[in-house]
Length: 296
Image (cartoon, rainbow, N blue to C red; front, side, top):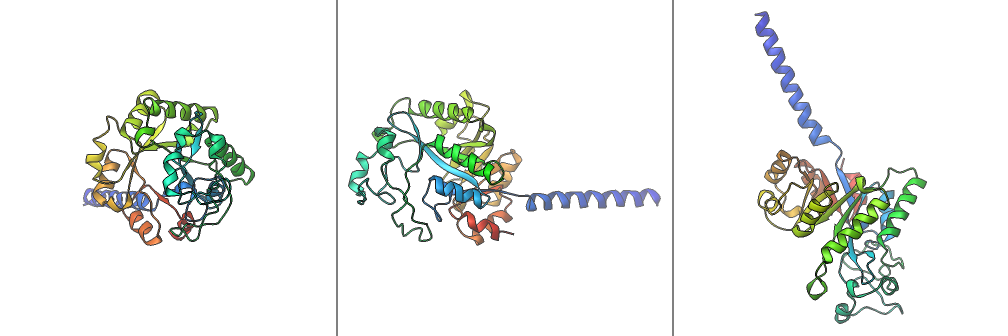
């Protein structure tokens, strides 16, 4: 009887431990990233956006291209986009002119003349209107680091998408040149342990994995299930970052079994955030990092 009592006590303790473990995963603090610095609130991929994201306690998600003069510029598009930009004289950038405004064909001294913060974007009516240029990655990092230290914030964490230009602007050796420049800069700044390099392009990720294995990588995907998508890589990335519409419980379970963290994008309502949190995702990427405070 005494042994039976001990056995039942042991079973009860094991159940409690399992319950606490599951509760811990469900309640553990998740990674919260500001998509393009939080483009729903501030001009996307700009220094004011990154400062605002830090004020909100979010990590910084951004995109990088290589310019004609081999500088790393922060931009989501491979050109100066008519949707958000004004010319150096304050005129609207026409859609037809975008093909002549490709970032890989322009030097940064020409790119920085364009205003990418003043123009109203009906897709993001809450966005503040600020006259600002596309920044160089080096200046963005320096500013974010100084800003965070001055305000006694935690040191910034960065999720940087290595971007590919489209069509004829994708020249041979572009991937290698972009990644080499990025890696050199991140090491120079001594921040690589706080950086995730993400990409939709499997070749870009394979180069990173082979040449720079000490960097943390994330695989961005638009469609499909986790198991099939991850089979496109010859290695296991630290993060799997799908469009939030395609995230299912089975995908999260599969990734967690492989010790891969799941960070969906781009999640822009509290309701969607709560649903994804209930699926035990490890992070969220949103245009509205101000909503993160409403999650709990």
